[in-house]
Image (cartoon, rainbow, N blue to C red; front, top):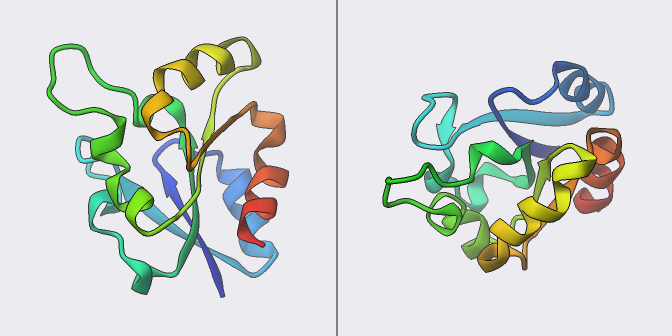
Length: 122
């Protein structure tokens, strides 16, 4: 079974649609929200094919010494693509703020999430 890891706040209808297609979903936390398994501890044994969530879950908080590369370190190491959601008008700015992890990040509007996740799982 394919598995999608997701951050808190991800659309429940998206998650339900994935499960209806026989795709498992696993809650993931960013280290500050205590939601699911801490993303920094995921490994290949979790069988996560893609991570999805809103962009604010990985953007740095001003004054804190953690950045997107720190939060998504295990995704980079394990070659797990990350699909981040942002409003159309914010996509460009979000991509610029995620420049150092752009190799495995895709930023999309809410309307594009399901199709993008399905594509990344193949």
